[in-house]
Image (cartoon, rainbow, N blue to C red; front, top):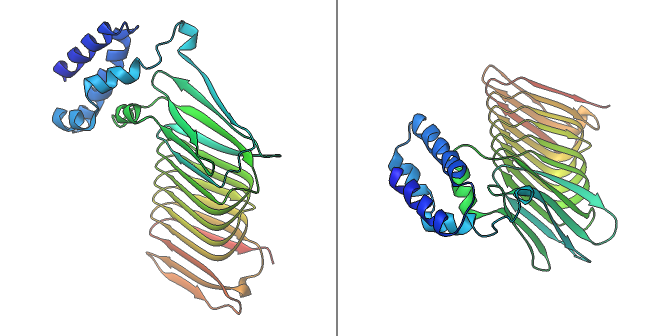
Length: 291
């Protein structure tokens, strides 16, 4: 680890990088935290980019003034007929906000350790946390940031969001296919229509109000799932220790119901063509209908 940091120091000094001591202390602390968690120095260094790659990235846009070191990024795509949005980040929270018109605007926090690649190819808006910086965040500590995507609410065919510790929020949107995955980030959906909707999290909580879907799939380990005014033809929910609470629009008679728990199961055969399937190990399951 010492050789790695010494080489990084030398490269940063050659490039005229400021605040070298603070920067190296930041990385050294992250690496020591990971060693304390049981990983070897060799494993950590194997995952990291080389000192040359790190130095190149850190000096890519050397700030001219202290106040420029952290601020806001903004990209505007006029008359963008966006059909797909793909977001792959580590520590950013993501908020999707509907707008009138056809322009798309992306606003985001940025700093030396928090940077994004934002691109649009005429169909897909792609947002990703920079590769070299992600290698640092894998060490266990990540600076938090926010991304706000302002996009037409009726044009998006596919939405895919992957984040580790960031939250995800979507409201007042109509999306054909939705895939959202987090590790510890919470997920909030409000007044969202999605033909196929897949939500996965480890410890994040899931909250939805006014979600309408044809096929809804939710998977969680310890995160809770609370869905109110839910409309769906097929509902599949699995959790280990998280609680599940559902308020479903319609009547119980419309659904075939299968609730599987470690201590006992429940089944009900309705007269409609809808399904409610919930699998839980130790989590509590409660559901009700509006009629």
